[in-house]
Image (cartoon, rainbow, N blue to C red; front, side, top):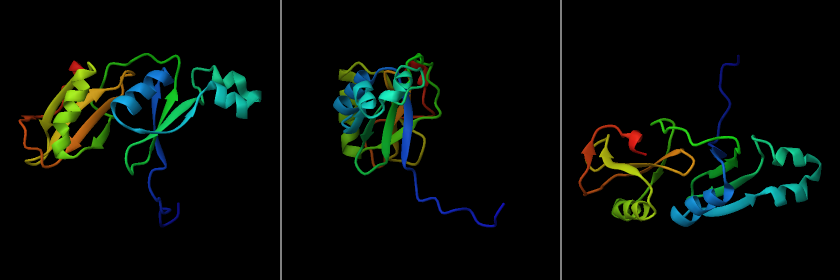
Length: 162
């Protein structure tokens, strides 16, 4: 082992498993407001790699939807056909920062779309608020903010309600 670690410049992308790219696009782009960067669906994949058609139909598929929130790294939603929705666990999860004035709007939008949620909760200092929810595939997500003035419950999330 060398004395110094290599310089890691940051995360290039983060991946989450999904079992339907269309549902993923509706949830992440239409509901949550992510920007669609690219969609590498079966047709696109086969146009570039017709020699690898068997991979497009595999459970661990290269097919994916790439989205981006603001200036954050890309989120790649990879098609995992054989995966069922797991029982959510508190970790790992992705936390997305929102403006404190927008948290109530985010909550209302999730509720309007019948997305189960837990929160707002405070785990940090006064003004901290987190809302936990799961995507249609069981991946736990969080809206987090500082400076929130609305009511919050103290304590860790109850992901069993998701």
